[in-house]
Amino acid sequence: MEITKPRVALLASPGMGHLIPVLELGKRLVIQNNHHATIFVVANDTSSEQLSKLVNSPDYDILDIVLLPCIDISGIVGTDASLVTQIAVMMHESIPALRSTISAMKYRPTALIVDLFGTEAMAVADEFEMLKYMFIASNAWFVAVTIYAPALDKKVLQEEHVNQKKPLKIPGCSAVRFEDTLEAFLDPYGPMYDGFLQVGMDMSKADGILVNTWEDLESKTLAALRDFNMLRRVAKAPVYPVGPLARSVASSPVSGSHVVLDWLDKQPHESVIYVSFGSGGTLSSKQTMELAWGLEQSKQRFIWVVRPPLDHDVFDSYLTAGSGALNTAEGALDYHYLPEGFLIRTRDVGLVVPMWAPQPEILAHPSVGGFLTHCGWNSTMESIVNGVPMIVWPLYAEQKMNATMLTEELGVAIRSKEVPSEKSVVGRGEIEMMVWRIVAEKQGHAIRNRVKELKHSAQKALINGGSSYNSLSKIAHECENSLQFTQEKAEG
Ligand code: UDP
Image (cartoon, rainbow, N blue to C red; front, side, top):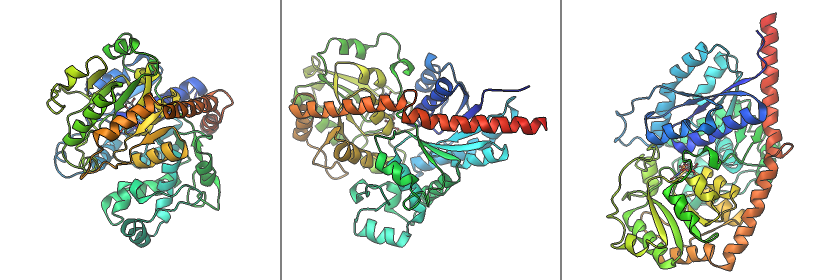
C-alpha cells in the first residue's frame, strides 16, 4: 500500500529544555508539512508530573509520543559524573529500545532527527536506511563553534584560549571571548572535550542540521556556515535555520486560570519583571539573598521562580549534575533562604513561585515588562517572540555566549557589570538598578522597541514563504523524495 505522508522520528534527550523544542519541531513538521511525527522521549523519570503534563498537553495530540523505558542511572548519580555524562549514558542505553521500536513500526519513518546528545542514534537511521538530521535547539553561533572544534589544534587551544585567555576565532563568526567560553574548551585534554569533538564530527555526517534560529537573526553566522572558504569546508552538512521554535501559550501544560496569571491580570501594562533560571538553574545562598534584596529595593513588581540554593559554583553544579537540570520541577519548598520578612514585605508587589511556573503564559502576558533570564535558548526565544526585553544572567553551557549575543549584537538585553562567580555575587544595588532600568526607565523602552522589531522579524521568518518556513520545506521535500524512492524500490 502506498503511503503518501512522510513519517519522521525525533529523539529527545533528557531534560525539559531538550524535550520542549523537539516537541515544537515535531508539531511544526505536522502542521506545516503534513508529516507524521513520532517523538521518542528519553527521561530519567517518565512518571514525573511536569513531564506527563507536557506530553499530555492537547496541543501535542497531533504527535505520537513514545516514552522510552527509563534508564536506571542510580549507579552514577551522586558520584562525580557530570550532568552531561548522565545524559550521555541515558542516551546510549536507550538506543536498543529505539532500534527495536523503530524496527517494529508498521510504517518505517523516512527520517530520524536527533538532538545534540543523540548523535550515536544516527547509526540506527543508517541501519534502517533513513535520512538522518541533527536538531540543535540553540543558535547558529553555537553550531559554528561545535562544528569548527574538530579543526582546532588542541595545543593552540590550550595555550592561547585557556592559558592566555585569548578569544577563540571562528571563521566568519564572532569570536568567543574566554569569559564566555564553553566548559568543554576549558580542558582540551579532558573527557568532556572529547565528547564535544565527537558531536562536532558527527554533525558533519548528518544529512542536515536544523537550528533554532532564523535568517535575519544570525545572517552573518549562517553565511559563514554556508561559505566553503569559511565553515562549509569543515561543516559538511547543510544548515537549516527553522526557528524560532518557541512554545505557544496553547502548548503550555497550564490551561485556564492559574494563580500567577490571575495575579498578572491585576498588574499594570509591562510593569512586571519575570525572574527565572530555566528548568534547573540555581544560585548560591548568598546570591539568592542578594537577588531577593535587589528585587525588594527596586520597588518594581516581580514574579520570581525560586529554587533552593546550591552552595557551590553554578558552573560546578552543572558539571556535577547538582543543578537539578534533570529534575522536572517537583518539590516542596520552604523559604528559609530568603531574607526574613521578604515575602510579607513584598506581598503587594511580588509573587514567589516555587520551582516551576507557566513560562509561555507569563511571557505572553501584557503585564510583563522584562525577563531576568539565565539565557537558555528556549527562554531566549520565548522572550523574543513575546517582545520582552531581558536582563541576562547566564549560568552554564552556551548561555554566556547567548548573553553576549543578546546584549552586544542584538541589543535586546542588559547585563550586570559584575560577573557572578564562585567568589563574588551580583550585589543588591546592581540588581535593583538593572530591574529599574529594564521596566521603569527610558533605556528599557528603547530595548523593548528593539525586541519588538525582532519579534516581527521572527514572525516573518515563520509565515508561508518566510526563511524558516522555506528551510523546513526543504527538509520536507527531501523526506518526500526519499519516501517516493523507497516505495519505487519496493515496487521493483
Ligand atoms: N520552563 C517553564 N517554567 C519554568 C522554567 C522553565 O515552563 O519555571 C520552560 C521554559 O519555558 C523553557 C524551558 O523550560 O521552554 C527551559 O529551557 P531553556 O533552554 O530556557 O533552559 P534550560 O532549562 O534548558 O537550561
